Image 1 (cartoon, rainbow, N blue to C red):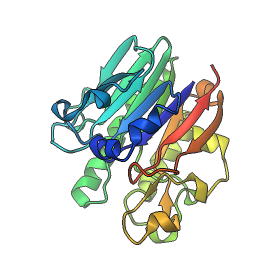
Image 2 (cartoon, rainbow, N blue to C red; image 1 turned 90 degrees about the horizontal axis):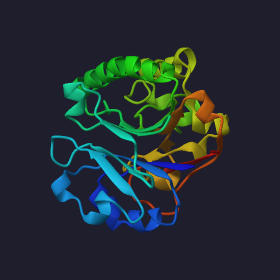
Image 3 (cartoon, one colour; image 1 turned 90 degrees about the vertical axis):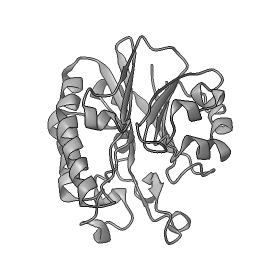
Amino acid sequence: MRIITANLNGIRSAANKGFFAWLQTQQADVVCLQEVKAQAADMTAEMLAPAGYHGYFHYAEKKGYSGVGIYCKQKPDALIEGLGIADIDSEGRYIEACFGNLSVISLYLPSGSSGEERQSFKFSVLARMMPHLEALRKSGREVVVCGDWNIAHQEIDLKNYKGNKKNSGFLPEERAWLTDLFGRVGWVDVYRALHPNTTEECYTWWSNRGAAYEKNVGWRLDYQVATPELAYRAIQSSIYKAQKFSDHAPLIIDYQP
């Protein structure tokens, strides 16, 4: 089973950069998208359902903003759009597809980099997400949460960790939240389980400033976080950088059946 997660920074922009032609070569079973930045009326037939896939979306109310989606080869048994929390759901940040005892979730946690108000909202979302993630962990289901978590967990997860300790995405409180998720709650960071010591090759996001991409001054913000039984069936992963569809790179992980 191959699962891909990709923050597109605009599905229309990614389409123009060849994302859908690339997708057809990947043989993915499920593809989780974040930052679609579109509403239903903006979507082409290919964007709604690429050849061989069913497509499902949770759009933000604000035009050209946020939004998540899932493409899957197999039609899900059930679909959950949103968390049932109005201010989070209005931004289109959560969609879950259920296949038997497996749930695949596309999640886009907010950034706090634009200022104190958005950072406060980010902390609020983290606080309210934790009980949901705890319940999923205890549900007995196999679950993988794919997406842009907007947090680099450890120093090895970003190039310039010394200069970012007071910046959103690497704040002590954010990092502690992930530590709690992976420790006390028992979720597994699948990429890190496969590559416990990898540094530069782990990055999935690069700023558009200062030739960060060319210099590989990156951050690892995109994760597949899974329940242990599923996580330990992961056999290989890769970050696709041969083409640039977005300021993020797709994270690809293969799991044994």
